[in-house]
Amino acid sequence: MPFRPLDQRHILLVHPLGYQAAAAQRDISRKANLMPPLGLASLAAYAEQQGMKAGIIDCFARPDSDAEIVAYLREHRPAFLGLTATTSSFHDAARIAALAKAELPDLTTLVGGAHVSAVRERILELAPAIDVVVAGEGERPLVGIMERERADWKEVPGLVYRADGAIVSTGLQGPGIELDTLPFPAYEKLAGFPDLYRLPIFNYPRTPNTSCISSRGCPYACSYCDRSVFRRSFRYNSADYLYRHLAYLKERWHIRHINFYDDQFTFNRERVEAFCRMLIDQPLGMTFNCAVRAEHVDFPLLQLMKAAGCWMVSLGIETGDPDLLAQHRQNADLQLLAERIRDIHRAGIRTKGLLMIGLPGETEQSVRNSMDYVFSLPIDDFNLAKFTPFPGSPIYERIHELGTFDEDWDKLDCMHLQFVPHGLTRERLEELFTAFYRAHFMRPRTQWGYVQMLWKSPDSWCRFLGNLRSFLSFAFSNRRIGDA
Image 1 (cartoon, helix red, strand yellow):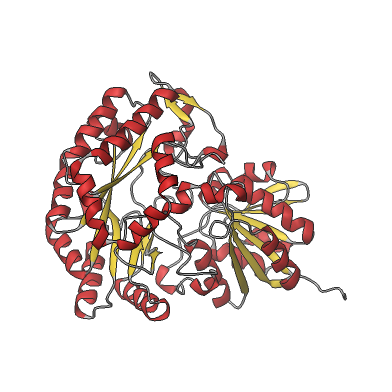
Image 2: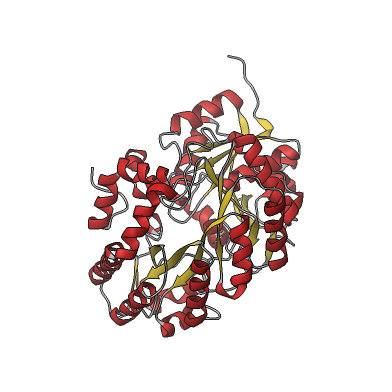
């Protein structure tokens, strides 16, 4: 076969699985929620808008993808491989980079995401097969690398890479990209979209459905949130762009329900009001979920959102203990949160509470206070995460002073208790976690709510019954991936 040079205007983007593919069918998180890698789909669309070529392989959606990656590299010979990495998937990203280098030794491997944006230089020390860290937003650095010779990478802000035996950093990026100038994500490059992807179980009324990101960043600085990519900036798509995005999803993919994966969907009230009025005046036949903070929503706005098709609202409660909440969150006001949760219920919108267990300062009494608080409110569903001190979060720098921390990156996924606050043991925290979940599901209100899902979200019930053994195993064993 004649030699073919690498295509300098072609990149393969890969979403790592994060653990062994053989365990994927037993992973409760994949069964409950399979979200498309919208960041990679956005990068692919932007790269092609700039005249490049891009492909996507989502290992999380199709776990046994090593052979597919190798086959793509052999057929297309891209000069670049881009990987996105969370803390728990970083080692798998490094493994895939080495796999790709073994096939195409001259390939340039890039990695981006919140984890590497926080750790930066350390990534190159830990992973010899990774050539470049992209810190911050990926669009402009990605195209900047592809358009330049290696000697000119120093002109591209947001990079950390090796040069002449040293590690070079080109500093922080400037102002973020204007989101309305970006093309819609390249959904067509996600094999199996949209049917392969599903929102969290009992979190949608109809299929097909998908996620959408209409903003970047968050203006708040809670102790547990990583702000390495967008820092303290907050930008958002206009109402018009957002409406056109949903119209495209409806026309092209027949999407019937959207989950807005924004940190703060209602932060700009005028945008949300304008968007909702568009949906009311020119209906698309779609419903949507979103996440809000209590400070940025009220009953009149909720009524408008309901009329526009809002089906569920999520709120970050974190903990129902006022003293503990005040240690970790700005504007800690459990009374305001309770009022807004009642407003959401009164507006006829399903309510989901987002909580954590094991925050620094947590005690058995604070867990009981959280249970009492949550169970006093009309919350339809909730997600209880295990506190995880991610690199890049404000609390990470002093986490060893606040308890015992086992920094095993593979397990930093909010489903393992790698941090245990002073005064508690891991075993006791696991017991409290399980007791909290079981108490929620034993409530008559909760049980009746799930009975109503028989007609409100019949597909969720089909998925639940089809994976009943796995869900019950998680409920009783508290393990994300069950035993083989």
